[in-house]
Length: 219
Image (cartoon, rainbow, N blue to C red; front, side, top):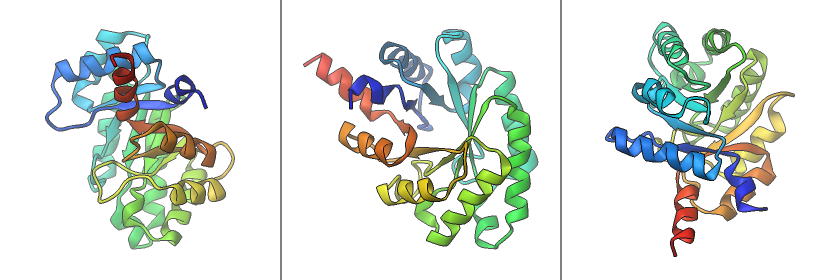
């Protein structure tokens, strides 16, 4: 698979708590240069990124990040604020305690609430697979499908592990029509990226692939 084709599926990401505006601006410049699907930036930078890139680049941000245990009303406020400031895509973290307690109605309500705010804009649901059982992962595939969210996403990149081929294959088997898969966390080579795409992922959360391309170009 051509590297440029892979990069078009990348959400070029920088979510470090110490990221500066200079770091974020460079992220955006690189995303435009290498034609990635989007950038994913901390919520505090969304407005500034929108002013900087205009309509040249899709802007993503995170909601309830990275632990997912803020209340639904707080996540809804975060989501509304980000959308008003120019976000095109939201990556929200579920409440893992709700999932492990069997409180599916709480999860269903929360995802639907955020999808209603998003409208036609994209909602990705981060389930943090490293903390879940196989049965819980399958339940989340069902819930994401039922609620009309656009993507199920493996990981925040802040948990104990990131994406695995096994999890992406499991998602591909159990999601419903119209739901896409985002693999994120630990993707560091084009070979890994291609494997995830072949298994069913249509988005990849990483910053390393652009870095590799820049290293290639500069010898």
